Image (cartoon, rainbow, N blue to C red; front, side, top):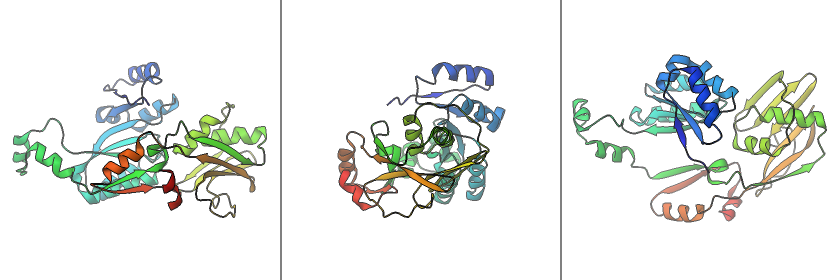
Length: 295
């Protein structure tokens, strides 16, 4: 996996887009800083989205009272990005509010916490009334006893998962609508399924809505589609604990489901065994406890 995050530190929008076009297929993602965001705002971010870069890292280092940070992140709901930085020194309540807001917006970005700015030294901290050294402060902020993993796309190898379809074959119009509906989502399962489906014409959706934790729904002309959990598409089904599934219905008729057979990243069991000696481990997943057998 390419792990290069390219810091695009410029306020020149045309130059930034030109560079992004040239390197986007050679890196993991691009980091946009505060100076760029202050110069161009969300419209500048949308220019990157338009050229297919939707997992941007917004390095805004948010720090304020919890409710203000919550509302600031909620205000980013109509752009696509994958990561957002906040200050760890904002406190637990602020961090919790930031995570809550991130889960409620369309992009569902990962929150990355900055402990200490690299420009600060021991004298700077002392001047702010903090008698810790920089090293001590970083260690203090880093003292955690629980590590939480998001399963899909984090500990699973998304490029190695096996995906099969079970159900009524979709017609050409339904496939086009499905592909274009998935195109608007950043959820890891949506991205995997989008890559699996054959290329189709890009169409403009009349309506699109993503409901966090449930699924997607869209409409073109008189054709509707729902993509997501069984309950979201109004399908009554017994839970199959070892199958991660994305269900499809069109015009309120259930069509079938795509089943994802998870393959975990190489070395994940070894990592978990090592971490488990010191930390409590939690995995966020839509599967139930039976999936533990595959770890």
